[in-house]
Image 1 (cartoon, helix red, strand yellow):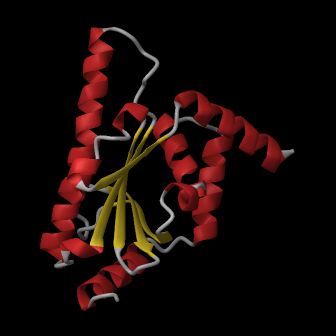
Image 2 (cartoon, rainbow, N blue to C red):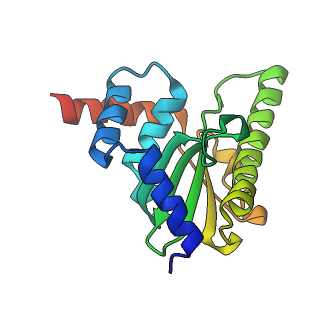
Length: 181
């Protein structure tokens, strides 16, 4: 059941994210052909495989937009989906370079791991306080290129999924070959 406050948020999303599913799909397919940004490629994979990764996600409401009017300083959501159960599912993505070695790279990876969880938890809190959406109607997920994170979300109620950098690149080439030959 969708609450009144959640209905207001969905209406808000339809105003600030007017692109159709097909238009967003075309954008991500362009990213696959010209992968100029690794984070966007990861997001393309997530968008095009959402039902396999996060099966409760039904309808994309926001992509890379602030959930709080035009306050981008308060953070943008990578993805906000409406679930089949009528809840919101917030998903943050992070391309983490798991192939780089050395102490500095290990430190950078750990910083990125912590940051992506911090982002999704902070956004959940903002939804609760700004939109008055009950916490039980907010689900959180994290999608990265780091399988080391797959267990980290359990204790904080965040669903974690990952894809290896190699698998992501193989998928990109395969998707391109299948769809553009």
